Image (cartoon, rainbow, N blue to C red; front, side, top):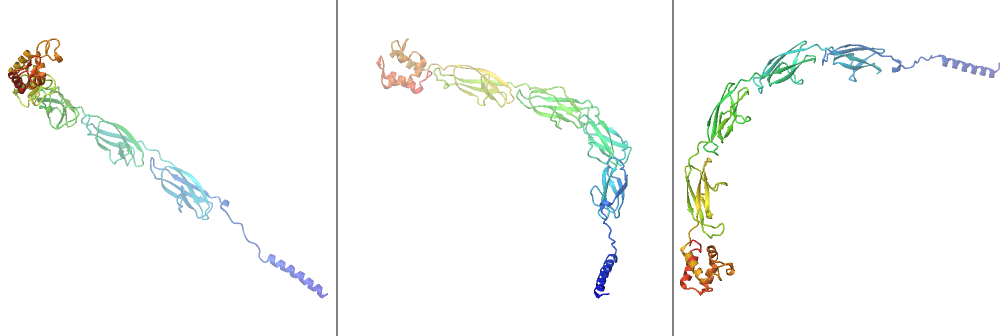
Length: 437
């Protein structure tokens, strides 16, 4: 056999045996990975219902199959190693089971509340002692469950069923047991009938029509002491004496310790008899020809018989402290006097004109001779409208008369007048130039 053939056969054999040993010396043993989709995790469990009402003693116990290393949570909370969840209120809960590979499954469970028992509420009621008293009471008790608390407003509960300081009215007492189950009942606080309260009184009259020194002393009986008293039905006082009262009608109201009320018949405060006020007047006569508001007429009032006297001219108007009234024209006047207590007295006074004075008489005679005649200062058309036959015109023109007759020395139409007549005119003017001078 040739050398080349042997080399070729050897090469073929090497390739064959190499391929055989490479492919058969180590068999392939790998398997596919398992995923969460390949698992079926099943949650089963039991629930224990609450004992009722608002109790939180329900529970859920679960377990899971389909994998290993489970932990559990409820409503998205932290995971725990056990499937038991306690202290649950009534409601629906979502339980999640998670295996050691993180694969999860969930299931809902419902905890229900056991039906509440029938809770019966009874009470003993103490009525208030009067319509406005707040001393009523309710003592309530309950049956049908246990662990009761009590409320009269449905919100604030207390461990006992005793409620004091109650006014007249209706009250709903609510009872709640240990599980929050409730029962309620309505109780009425009424009032004990008020007694008849009688009021007697004594009065002190005022010292006068406008005085405010009257008083009433009232005594109440028939109710529960102590009493309070009022003269307007609104403002009460502990004292039974009312002072500083004016003339008028008063009704006294008494209220006893239980706020029961009684009232008096109308009590009348009147005025004591006024004293006799005696009036005497001193009159100064008025001036016949005085200008307005400048007369000399005057009335001085002198009164006696009381105190705090004030005075008034006329029957209306304000009284004044001064007893002198000035600048009065002639006429009849009524003067009034009032004392500190409103007692009054009146009197009449007449202001007359002062008589014509001797100096004025002399001047009037001079004028009559020299110019008080027709064609001069008299008659229907006196010169310059000045008529010296009128007394008040003479008084009004005294300065003109002095200027013409005394200073100038003439009195038309008669001409110059005597020194004696001039002196008479001067004397009258110096005395005041009045009708009464």
